[in-house]
Figure 1 (cartoon, rainbow, N blue to C red):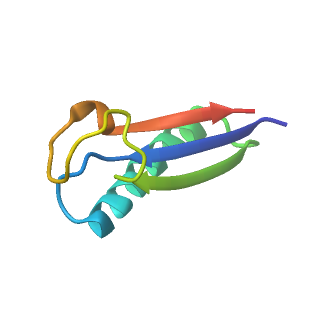
Figure 2 (cartoon, rainbow, N blue to C red; figure 1 turned 180 degrees about the horizontal axis):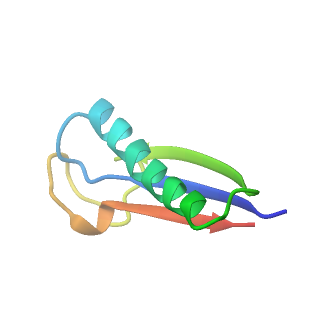
Length: 75
């Protein structure tokens, strides 16, 4: 069995609560795409780090496209 973890991230623009929800939506889109590709027997963990774990450290209210991402970890 393959265990898959999908984590959504955002930049620091906007409210932290909104970014948490946006990160979760971003991760769920990837999870849905994987299911549509036939990967239905996976153990999927979908989560959001919102703006809490940036790839590039920035001050609040900073647009940084590299922080807007989803990370997929396969175990």
